Length: 310
Picture: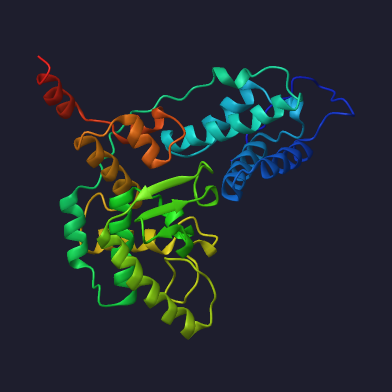
C-alpha cells in the first residue's frame, strides 16, 4: 500500500539532499562506528519501507505527518509498529546529528502497547526438555550442551554461535568473552562449573570429527552438522534456535526459546539473592532498565513479595 504525502513546499530546492545519499552516508558512519551489520540491515529495510510507502525523495520532505501516515498504513502488530518507529527515530537522529534536520520533531511520536509479562524458563522446564532430547547423536548432544550453557550462564544465542575454543578457560573455569562476541561490544567474564567444562571437552572432540569429515576449518564450539559455524547463515535464527522451536512444538513444551532461557537464568539469580546490578552485568546489559524488563514480576508475585514487608 502506497500513501502519498504532500511535501511542505510545492517547489523543492535543487540542492535538496536526497534520502538515498543521506542513508548511504549514515550507514557508512554506523559501519565505521562499529554497529553490527544486522542492525544496519534492519534500519535499512524499515526506513526504505517508510520512504517507499510515503513517496518521499528528499530529507527535507520528512514531517511528523509522514511518519504518522506510515505508521497508520503499515499492517503490523502494535509491538512491531513500535519497533519500526524506534528504527525510524534512530535514522532520523543520525540525520539530525549531521545537520540535515534542524529539530527532533519525531520525539513527540509515541506508541503505547499493552505490556505483557514474559515468563522465563524454569529449571523443571529445562529438565523436561533435556529428557526428550536424544543425546546419543551429535545434534542432540550439541543442543543439550547449548541449553545447559544458556541456563547456567545466561549467554545470548548470538554469542553462543560466536563462541570459540579460545574463549574457554578450563583451568579457572571461566568464559572470557571479548567484545566481538557480545551485543554491547564489552568484555565479559562468566564462570562455568565442572559439568559444563566436561561437556565442552566432549563437544570439542565431536566437533573435530565432524570438521574432519566435511573438510571445514574453524574453532567454533557450536557448529552445524556439516561442520560450519552457527552464524554463517544470513538467517537471523541459528541452528540452536530452530532446534529449540522444533522441540517446543514437537513435545508441546512452553517457554522453550533462547530469550525465555535467558530470562529464566536472570530470574534464578534474583531468587538466589543476586542484586539487579549484578544480574545486569552478568547479562551484559548496557543499563539497568533493560534488566528490570527481564525480571518483570506478575501481579501475584509482587503481592506475595510485598506481604513479607508488612
